Length: 217
Length: 217
DNA sequence: CGCACTCTTGACCGCACTCAACGTTGGTGG
DNA sequence: CCACCAACGTTGAGTGCGGTCAAGAGTGCG
Image (cartoon, rainbow over all chains, first blue to last red; front, side):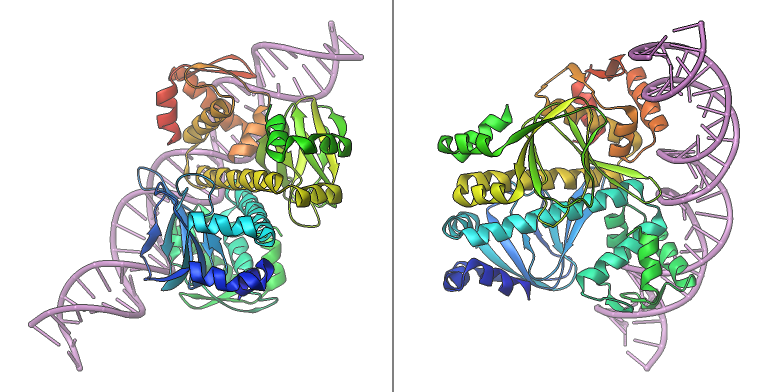
């Protein structure tokens, strides 16, 4: 679990202080943790489940900017308010910190601050990779990239089964496509024998190397 | 100039040390500073001109992930190699630091580290805004967003002239469009009297409020 | 002047979107 | 238990926005 790794990085002596500051919270699937524009007075770490972060336009168009897994941080945006909304994909638990206390803690613990900076940099690189996907890749390349990225994050190295907790609508809004195109593209990749779809919420990678080829990696 | 602000943030006592570490470098328009995949052993600040950061696919498709202006940092990616290429848009000068020495300096100067973290967070938020643009906005909305973003960065508040140093090809690769579509869309916004184009490399904003409306801001 | 390069404009095309129908699943109440 | 319904996903038919291809105008440089 990555959150434990963070605590280790922050120095074991801080662990009691961290947990003393934190309060837990359960979130049902579909429930929002906060919305874009809300005053950002809390910082969170995800301990269980999955969150989606998204931005909305006034007419309802949506772009999902990321899916978070246990160990990830959110709410660190260095502004007065959150720059995206956060909603649970499946039943989820988070660890909640009051922002000023969290910042005080960073103050006292340079290792923690380094960890945060490293994570933010990694996220920025991921966002730039996603810009390439959204700006330049075809639907087939986008879906292949999505599956390969999920597999990497799940530490699946070669062929194998992969949980797909989010809906087709979420995938579409993450990849800049429609649900119909996502559905058709899954079917296409299945017909090409690159993947199998034993269930709506499971992908089985059959030809990893070719899938990565298609993804443009 | 923002680089001076950074030095101030880092504490004036560090200024001599910073400049002692740095070596300057001039880059002609079109020349690359480094390429994606190169070993990331140097960190830079831009002191004059403009850089574009981009990612390439094997078949030549390109996505520009950002344009940098004086005061901006680059090369901070927390990995062994650069995750994008950097090329000068116009004649440009950068300040160059050897990576280990730069990191040592961060070590000694928490204020500097905070500044870097703040900038990285701001860049991440900008990248997420760009994901919304690339994933969900129309060509007209993209070009309007681009102009408004440039205006904001140039501290132009209402109507006014705006330099556009990059080529149509660069704009296209930044907005996930083709040069033809960028050109047509500029013409469209001109016919709608939202902008004027006195020169290839100048936009004049005529109706700021409506332009922001179109941009979806 | 001639060449190369950038930008604009026009005609046509195709990939992904829209609209629609249908199948599947899971929850609810009779 | 089954009937009903709503939500989600799949598939098909047709459309349209932005891409492709092509021609021409404008500009800078040797």
